[in-house]
View 1 (cartoon, protein in one colour):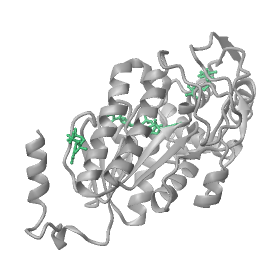
View 2 (cartoon, helix red, strand yellow; view 1 turned 30 degrees about the vertical axis):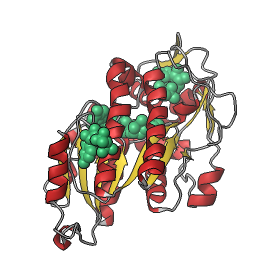
View 3 (cartoon, protein in one colour; view 1 turned 180 degrees about the vertical axis):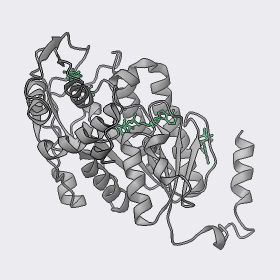
View 4 (cartoon, helix red, strand yellow; view 1 turned 180 degrees about the horizontal axis):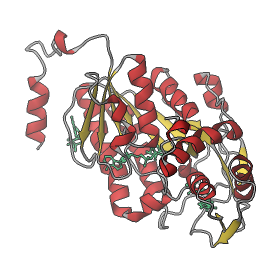
Length: 343
Ligand code: NAD
Ligand code: UDP
Ligand code: UDP
């Protein structure tokens, strides 16, 4: 396999060792792994809009072709069914590495696969970045802080993570992915960027992915009770997807490696979130308590001073503004009410 990779890399270079001029235009060639997913598809929209040439690789575990249908037929867009755990040869200038299930329900479904995706998948994408000299951005997560003992969480905090728990495949997987990213940066001189993303919501989230915002919105629309896990006093900070995409692009184009927290500091208990959903969709929606999941972090809120200062970025969409945009998309997908479509 290594011989094949090396041969193909050599084939693309002229005798002088330079990439042929015809292969390098002004348009950036950008790889988005996991681009058929929730965040990835919104990122692809912005990159295509900017005039870039985009390749998506996705194994469709949680992503959907529907999220990208509107780009089919565009010569600047290419979709490849591929699992990042396997090596792949491509020629690109930048890599946004998102491939990994993000919902706890999805990443716990096959934990060994999750950790392989995070470790072997990230290794492969870093190997690709090294071979072609591409800049590499890792979408890490606030979960690297585990059940945090520091509040709010700054990037300097090393976290409080259970290495053998049911969430570890994701938390430790992403921590290892960060380590690999920094080691390729230090050891192979690759240009890298690390984003630590906090809970993000918006149109195109999987309807039944088990995350709290998608659950509450779908439940309220279907006139089912909102399922609050535990006592509902645990907190999260919810970021609208367009703010995240803006932050990812600023990070990629900027001069700083990171890690950078990308999240909205507006902090809500799950009961407060349920209340906002009631106000937005159905004031009569009932609340039903369920036992909480294992190792659930008690609180989470990003300190975004570093991103504000060095990237000139901060979120613009508060929960009460972003939620209705997501509700329109969910309503359309649940009831097929096309007049409400937003995405
Ligand atoms: P998502 O599940 O909607 O998207 C992930 C995409 O990756 C899907 O299209 C899926 O099919 C694909 N994928 C998964 N495993 C793969 C593999 N082995 N090979 C190829 N493709 C694979 O999740 P999302 O919310 O869009 O998250 C995107 C990234 O952002 C993830 O890396 C996630 O860890 C990170 N993140 C998201 C959040 C959030 O709140 N949405 C928070 C923190 C971090
Ligand atoms: N890799 C890849 N595409 C490439 C280059 C490398 O998928 O264009 C994979 C490769 O198969 C390897 C990993 O990335 O498993 C790390 O590559 P690297 O060259 O850093 O390490 P090595 O192959 O020497 O172990
Ligand atoms: N949660 C909830 N009801 C649900 C789904 C989740 O109360 O229907 C809680 C969950 O226990 C956690 C919080 O909401 O405390 C956020 O969970 P989510 O799965 O959205 O994200 P993560 O735990 O990864 O932050």
